[in-house]
Image (cartoon, one colour):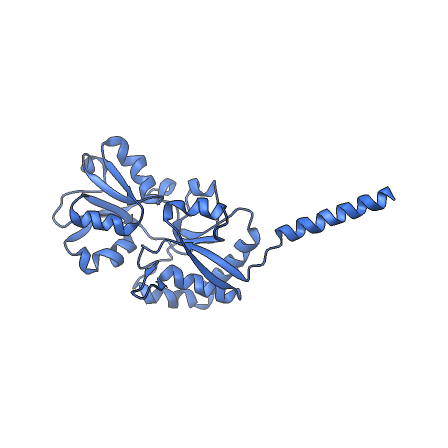
Length: 260
């Protein structure tokens, strides 16, 4: 009798353990910071739009899942992901060694460079020597904040973090900042090519530092959700293979953002 009870107990534990980890991905919740056009922003009617939004919508379609977008400040994305506020971070999150210690990532979605923006005519360059004594705005929690605080702040550059990218540009326009450091594509399309970006320019070329800037953006995931990662990776691979990714890309860019 005891052996039978023990066997039943083991079976029940196995069943309960299996049910605890068997997840239904008929709804996928993505965390997004909607201040980063053209990747993610809000239309005048309040609807979320952008490259990341379109990619997520297509991924959900392929997985027969409902997409739910959860707005969150970028610097709180990883804690909110771990707290299960959403299932993935689909918000131009670069895959860096530091982040990979905490979370997993899907396969790559795109790879865009980092650049400095200044007023036209300014003689500043994206180096610690050139920016010494100057103020540079960054969005909190971004790879640009990590880069600037790692290499520039110790050498006399005042690095000022902001809750979102729009706040960075507002202070750049008002003159409270000497420069801003962000994704080059976002700066070009979301700022420099808009009316509010008149009078500003890129300063210097692309900044390359895999240690802090990573090797492209992916969807941030909890490490235990290996089944979701497998599903997302399959959907991304399918989009790239059948040309759907490229069709979505052409809505926003005149060049390849997927990269090498």
